[in-house]
Length: 120
Length: 108
Image (cartoon, rainbow over all chains, first blue to last red; front, side):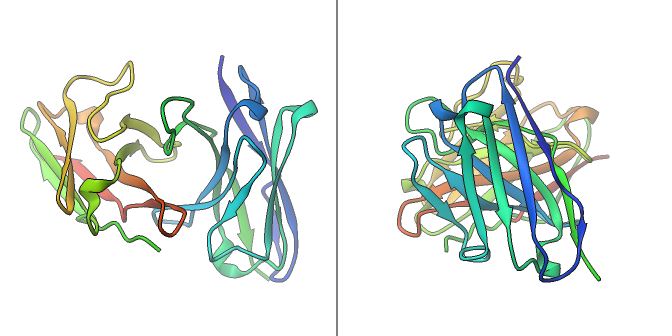
C-alpha cells in the first residue's frame, strides 16, 4: 500500500527548531518529487517546499532561509528542518507526493499530517 | 506569487449541482487541479489537469478551465460531498505551487 506517515511535530518556543520526518512505503521517494504543505488552524493549504527527483529544491518565500528540505533514500524518508520558528509557522504539516504522471504538478498521495505549534 | 481566488462558501441541496469557481490571471493557460478535504483529514485530489478524474472519484465530479476561471462541478450532490475544496496550479513564472483560498461546500 502506498502511504506517507509524518512525525516530529511538537510544541516549540519562538526562535526554536524542529525536524519533521515523512516515511514513505509502497514506493521509493527517490523516484518522484516530494513536498511539504501546511495548514494553519482554520486556514487554507499553503505549499512550503519541494524536493525534486533530480535533487533540486524550492521554497515558499515565507520559509526560504529558515527551512531546509532533504531526503534520505536509504530510509525512504523525506525531512523538513525548521529553524527560527515563528508563531505564524503554527500549522499541520502534510507530506505529499507529486504525481508521477505526465508533467506532475499536483499531489496524488498525502500523509495525515503532523502538528507544529510555535508558542511561548 | 500567483493568486487563486475562490468563494468562501457554497450551499447546495442534496441532488442539486454545486459549482465552485477558481479565479486567476490567465488561468486557462495553466493546468488546474482540485482537492477535497473533509474535516480532520488530508486532502485528496478529485480532478487533475483541468478535467481528469482519478480512479475511485465519482463521475459526478467534473472540471473545466478557460480564460481566467476554472470550475469544479459536483452533480447530484450527496451529504458526503460536504467538505472544503481547493484549486491548485503550478506557476512557472514564480516557480511556486499555488493553492486557492478554499471553498466550504455545505449540503443543506
